[in-house]
Amino acid sequence: MKNITWKRSLSLLMALVMLLGTLLLTVSCGTGEEDPAKDSDSITTGEQETERPLAYDTVEKQQFDREFNILTRDDIAADFEVEDLTGELLDDMLYERNTKVATDFDIEFGYYKLPYAEVNTTLNTQATSGSDDYDLYVGHKYSYGTCAQNNYCYNLGEIDTMDLTQPWWDQNCYANMTVNGRTYMITGDIFPSSMLTSSCLVFNRKMVKELGKDDAALFELTRNGDWTMDAMYEYCKDVSFDLNGDGNMNYTDDRYCLTSWMMDVPFSMYYACNESFITIVDGTPELTYSTEKVINIYEKIYKIIVEQNSYFVTDLNLYATTYEPFVGGRAMFCDVTLSKITTFISEMNDPYGILPMPKYDKNQAEYMSFVNGSSAMVMVAKTESDIEFVGTIIEAMATFNYDNVTPKLFEVSTKLQAAQDPDSSAMVDYIVRNRIFDLAYFADFDISNVVINALKEKSESISSKMTAAARSSKTKLNRMIAQFEKHE
Image (tube, rainbow, N blue to C red; front, top):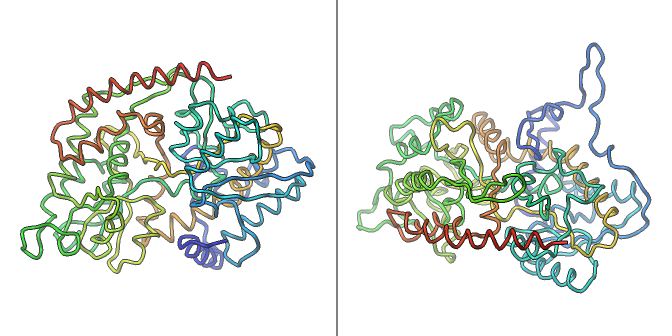
């Protein structure tokens, strides 16, 4: 198995944490809220102390004597395929999971990997041909329109051996992507990489101080519930500057208030304001957004991205340059996901801090984190011939990770490896606590793209785009509902 950078760093830090015997607060992957049951290995009841019951023990053990074949995306194959003990703790925990599940259920895992588009094509081919060569398919945002919506997936909610209401399944995902009782895709603890797709900000602490601002105040604002879009604007105001005086802003030479990538920041800022385009009402998706609020959100985003001349990368060929000004000490903020901190940011020389994305205003109750479309999703082909078997093994892997892998993953990867100070470690709790899933985004409705399209054009107004996108999205939503009603 090929080891990627964040896994290698993660494992080294795990070893350090275990050596020091450090106990850190963890967060439940399923609900996005703090789970006291996972803070310790025991529960105190009166005067007696009992061991915390394991989720894995709730899965009935059976001897199946067969293979369980997983077709995963090649970019996250490390969530499953571990061929042997490697000495790296994450690898070894997943190897232990695979060995334990294989032994307890008398199965042999088969691992296959393809690019995400080919995973979708393979599932569709299997479903239309009546085959069931693979038991678990790992989906992507674009699996929703190509697989789920077209009735090629099994309704996971009808698998008796899976309980989607449990915390090892992301409950925000379950609530917002279940249409008329049909759940075709879900994420949760089964994917160690999943929570690392949560959006956040990193900021250059040295630059904040050099510009006469208070870096510690950013943490205090967050703790007080006052880290808002307006507060971020005040920090960004007048920061971007043509350092070399050539009259042109260039990522190699000049200073920016923010660096960001077009497929991240329009969505991470928008959804951080706690406004989805689609809400599930009595089981049915409805376009429930407030046009006035969407316009107001866009105006706040526009002020930071365009008016304050941030480095907003819209050319795929320049994607990697998104992070260069920040790492080079020439940007105050950088829009990232938790996983990208390790990939792009962690080697920078200047000290940096981590923050959740800002709220819409102080009246917003919680900080919200956008979930990037690359988040892994469980899918099962509708032609699966032994659905109870498949559900049992999927549930076994998810519960084992919930008990054993997720606590260590978040103690280290999101609190130590990616965070250089205790304040940033605490901020991670805000980032992973409330993750937002919008069906309009996963189904790629036009309405979900109005912010990105307007920003790319540097348009001051979003009203006309809203009108056109609302019309086409309403048509697409009605078609989706009709499609779902025809699903068997």
